[in-house]
Image (tube, rainbow, N blue to C red):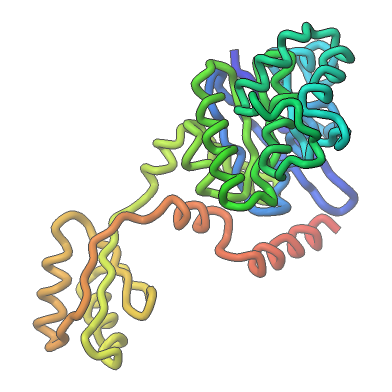
Length: 315
């Protein structure tokens, strides 16, 4: 059984279609990254799955139950959506005990989740003294109280400093080894690459990619970065290499050549035949970030223009 399944799932807000005809099937027992630029519909999708927002059309199931009846499955789901809210004057333990009583959960579960998120020893301190990273970990502890089959975390590292991001990443890796299904949304590729074994990429609410992380990594290609000794030769070098059949683009003051195994020597010889001396030649593999940007668009300005175009189309 899939942990989450959607069919034609759509949500509109006036002229904006936040989620458009989404067909998904997410595996159980995996750490799944929900990746996309800001405004791509990630949070709207999560809110529909949690029963907080009704879809405009389409269907979805969570842990085998339709989202039209969230009471059937929400007891088996833990979620952290937006910044967690706690009583700042109470300790971490007291806050969690209050939540456990509201959900009729045993008090012993509080000690267990504090240990899971690494707050044992700090549990009697007022939450108002906690760093943002510690508050996020406490929020995850609250989501873990019912020992959920599915844990949903919406942008868990948003606003954190580097140390806080490292803390949450380490926690996600531990949770991923516990056998439960973890769905993490983020616009930070490094976070998803480091922690997830399955990834979903959305852009303007449309599915761009869904599958194992290894499959996405398989989209990377080899390239050769070259720099001529004299910058004035860059244009002519590009013409020579393109004329030899390679795909060439400007990159970091030099050129990036799409080349296969063993092509670096041929690139070097082609430059030498043209009388161009190279001062740099590096063989490398595309980063996952480059693959992601190729899917979603390179910057916020382009994304804003494309978003505005989709709104005009709907209008």
